[in-house]
Amino acid sequence: MQPELPPGTESSIPHERIDSTAWEDIYVVGDVHGCRGTLERLLDSLELSPDDLVVFVGDLLRKGPDSSGVLELLRTRPNLRAVRGNNEQKLIDGRSSLDSLTDDDLSYLESLPAVLSWDDVMVVHGGIDHRKPFVDHSLTEVLNARSLAPEGGYNRPYWFETRDTLPRVFFGHTVLAKPLESRYAVGLDTGCVYGGQLTAYDYRAETLRSVDPPETYHSRAADSIVNPQPEVRKS
Image (cartoon, rainbow, N blue to C red; front, side, top):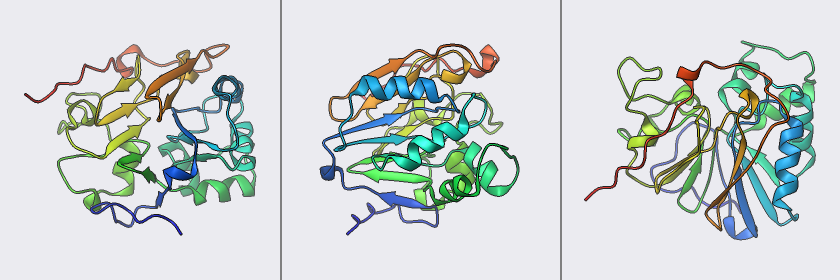
């Protein structure tokens, strides 16, 4: 029986609740973007057993060299699970395409929830605006959230730097110069496809693990890589 969703998180957004006690260790991994070789290196470094769970924050594909290979890994290993990212949603909606993907790949993408949760944790791709109830969020917001400024974009304040409430949100989407780790948000997209690292968070040990990619596969402007500010704690 699937655990019940925590109060206030019921909505029409596809949401899967995980029983954390069913897994020995749980890891959350940042945006992979088709970098299968880098992903395999990270998974090897974690020395996983079948009783360990790895959850991905979305954007498994596009931009890197082997999107279909990344999907093959996830589809064939039951302890690898993911939420959909904005890049998956573009394929689901038909707004973009990848010639290497099969009908089975697309069916897998369509099956992905937009939210995975356990304990007092939620995993999404973009983020959650803590200024309003989760039930008032749209799928587009959860997949793309970043700035809380009226003009959006890369203007501060960012939701993840100002979040001050549980549940703790693990996210990707915003490329960070280094991982963000606070009581309320953990940002894991450290830009492996852009020459940064691929980062995992060990949920039990509360530690970060990262590996370097063999090369830079895609360029990105420096002003769209965020240097996260330290958490501002309430007095």
